[in-house]
Length: 124
Image 1 (cartoon, helix red, strand yellow):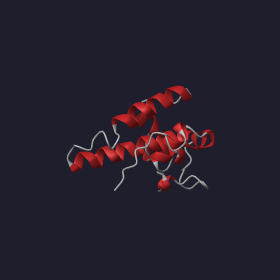
Image 2 (cartoon, one colour; image 1 turned 120 degrees about the vertical axis):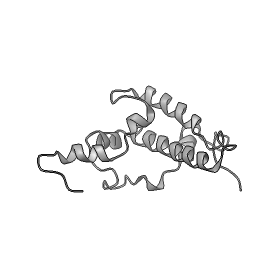
Image 3 (cartoon, rainbow, N blue to C red; image 1 turned 45 degrees about the horizontal axis):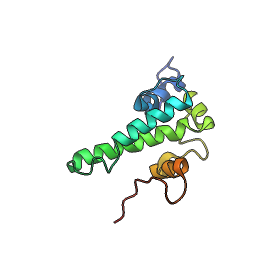
Image 4 (cartoon, one colour; image 1 turned 180 degrees about the vertical axis):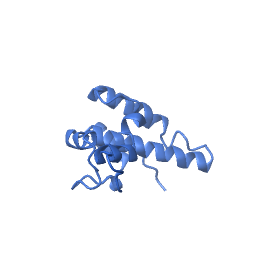
């Protein structure tokens, strides 16, 4: 990425990445509780099981949105990651902040815990 003369690199980086606040429908000053409620609202709406009867194209889009909602929650539920995100730093370049291994089930397991916890895993 090459910034135009006079362009702030941090602002350019922010403008080119996913807007996790927009994805969750919250503002930058949202409380942890509000972020968690927004996450649940959107995660349940885009849940793969909820959309299992839709055509393949819709299922693919909903799965993508479900993953983005989970990524947003992963960032905002960790104070260090949230600070890095808010400051405009590239999260994937930060050590240990790779979002490529994201799994929404890990969030559900962490929140509900144990084998009886809620899970969106599909048996094949």
